[in-house]
Figure: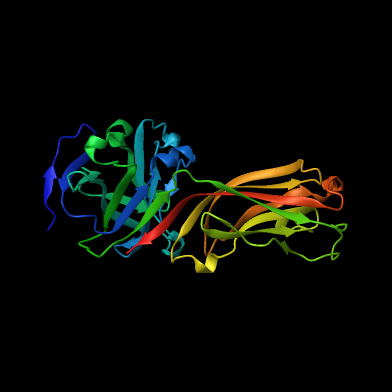
Length: 315
């Protein structure tokens, strides 16, 4: 049985307490929390966990939910997931609480709505939570124990009835001092791009960035919306089948075309969460065929890849 100790709280509608026991359903650990700001991750959604016969995820705004004009606070929400599988007219009444681990005192700060009746999730309202879960000034103060050595732990319990189960979790690790890797792929004797004149897809040799293997995939005659009118270009995770189960990799990458004088012709930049099931990202219309004359017969495809963070399942 959890040992609760209520504490004073000036946030209207919120009940806070201290307890020893960890969250029943989900734990969410973050390493290098400050890098979430530097990497411009305004919103982070966790993987899905189950509780009370339904599927859920947490949605974290490390700098506050700008859509609700929240500043100088951490915002956190519970979101019901995979609602397409629920019957028409579904609704779920839920009592939930969030957790923040005090690493100094080995205690958990719990936060929940004071209304014992809970919250009603339905098709028009799929998330509930706290716009101002905790002030960043309080959260960032190491003496409070919530953010120590730039690491923190959030958690959640979700009850649709008198339900208890062993929860799962994940650990998000932002990488300090992440370094970029550049890889060049020279393409010579590039023929005219006429339909069927060359292979549908070209691939570079695999290269390593952030302890993972990558490759560049080029469709001379386009792919998807770029079919027949553009060159399509993608970054792909070459070793996706070798990823630990449930791992996702947060990557900042730039793909560019360079001419024979090593001058940049065109480039595009993006960030993406790569995984075994989502192992490729790029542009269907990277370069329109009408601009191909600038490439002539030879050019270089340059990939600049920086692995910014990893998210792994916790047992």
